[in-house]
Picture 1: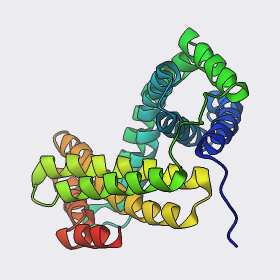
Picture 2: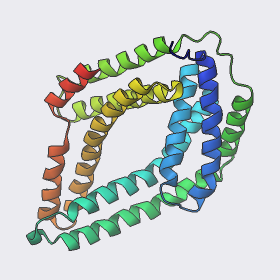
Picture 3: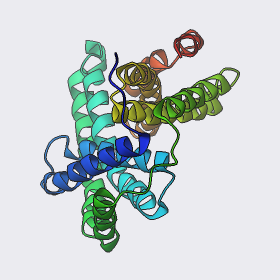
Picture 4: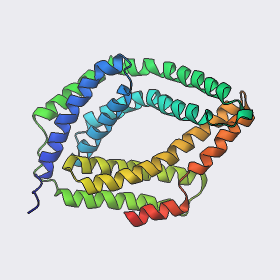
Amino acid sequence: MPKRRPPTGELLAARIAGQTVVLAGLEPLVRADAPDAVHRMRVACRRLRSALREYGGPDEPVAGLRRLGQALGAARDAEVLGAALVAEARTLPAECEPGLIAAELERWAEQRSVAARPEVLAALDSAWYRALLGELGELSTRPPDGSGLPPYRRLARKAERRVARRLAAARDLTGEARDAALHRARKAAKRARYLGETAGAAGLTKRMKAVQETLGAHQDAVVARQALRELARTAHPFEYGVLYARQLVVECTPGELEELLRAG
């Protein structure tokens, strides 16, 4: 007989308590600019927000987590985008001077990362961040009453239907509207994945991770194209144009979108 899952409220309460410990524990690592620390704190923010949203509140910590995630976002995005573009530049043909372009991109990414750092530290030094930790600590010891929450299976079905609706909405769109629709679908898949993690549901977690990764690659390409357009206005327009063209190949094709819909 399969093991029976605890009530939804218990699952979410355990998730909130665990991720609160993770979030607080990452603060010194983020302050020290340790590798991957910003990313891990950002993920903890998302997991906590997801759990609190399934609970239906309260609003204050959800807003605080969103604010913290935004403060961490620029630093993390600079890190990810810079690493991806540098790696891609190193594979350019010799006539495109891959070493030169990679070095230019490394400097550009470092400048963006340095510029984003004060916002991260200001957030960690703020009164609202301290209040957020206090609110999360309170929720960890006295979680909201979850007795009225629906069973996990119902929440999971609802989450998967949300992803399917958002994927379907992108079908007939093009250009920026399609990019935005796929980004919304990706966020829905991420929320569903976190729900699966919370309940230890390997199937849902695996399915939503696949959707998230496909759409994440698409979104990364969208962001990279925007950056490359700006870079090409200052120098090396041909070389950055080659990198731009490569991003078009990464995009989620209509066939891949249909495959995601069928898999869901």
